[in-house]
Image 1: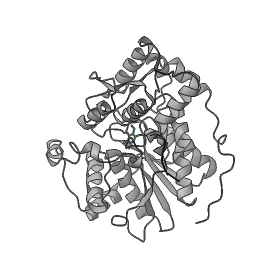
Image 2: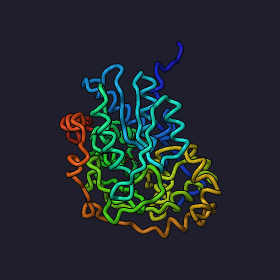
Image 3: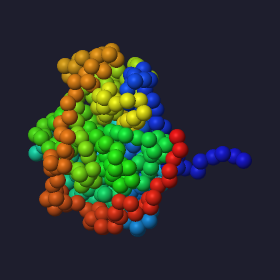
Image 4: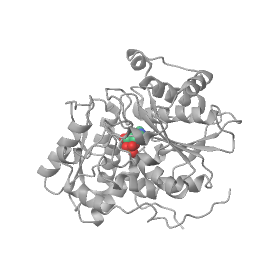
Length: 382
Ligand SMILES: Cc1ncc(COP(=O)(O)O)c(C=O)c1O
């Protein structure tokens, strides 16, 4: 029989879990990278993108020939651009000056229209200005749909239903710690909800950027793309998070560079930030403990930035660390908070001030309770 796949979109998900034997010692907890670059759009964002688009189609919110409009620093936009190309939708993506030229080029490869928003918001970031403009365009353009990754709770639901379950299955249920970066809260929110529902003993660690305020603190500008927000996103339930770390730009970039050379695994800065925390956590655990660490995209998207020696020097950063120095760097990390629920910084007022679309509110009203989709998960044998 011929073995063919009928659409590129059917190859989303089922990404591998990978050990890092050159950086992770055998007498420590076992670090496992959930390597999301293997999605066809190159990042974890393919998962919420296809989920939200297909829900919108089923609910009649996105019609044939329609326009998809989104605010995205790159990855979610690229996923939507790929999906739009495969399904025949026009796609408009609002990015900002931190978005790499490679990401902009990728968006254009898939035929998306790209708008660069240069006005900063009151957090020194571009999130609010990008979102406001995307909402305005969605109101003005006929037959437009806003996936709205920041406020749409289907974002975390996508991870609850796919990523979380894959992790449990691939770990044969044996996972003691889970680590993910946060921006819209989709991945950390959805996976933590699943784990705290079915495996409450798993320790959940959130990773944010120094300069972001998801776990409170002062917001200021930083260089890591993909991580962080000026407030706590609705997709994230802080009570599910046991511990939070904040990572500097240089730490995230250096870790990604070191792991490319020592493990042959290319990742972006959010993966670097999570991997550094994973190395730290594993140092205090014994080998039967599995530490699953989300690596949300690949490194090719950052060839002109973090993998470029000149660019790193221009930022005032070191260019290389050997693995022992990296491990020592990890050992010195201290949690930002061991009770993130007390640092929550939710902003219900933004629904009104940023004029969150009606379609988002309608979709959110139908989100189910934890546990609805997985009435009892199977027992796995190692
Ligand atoms: C590479 C990368 N890592 C992590 C994140 C954060 O994921 P989330 O938005 O689901 O919180 C993003 C979000 O854009 C990302 O692009």
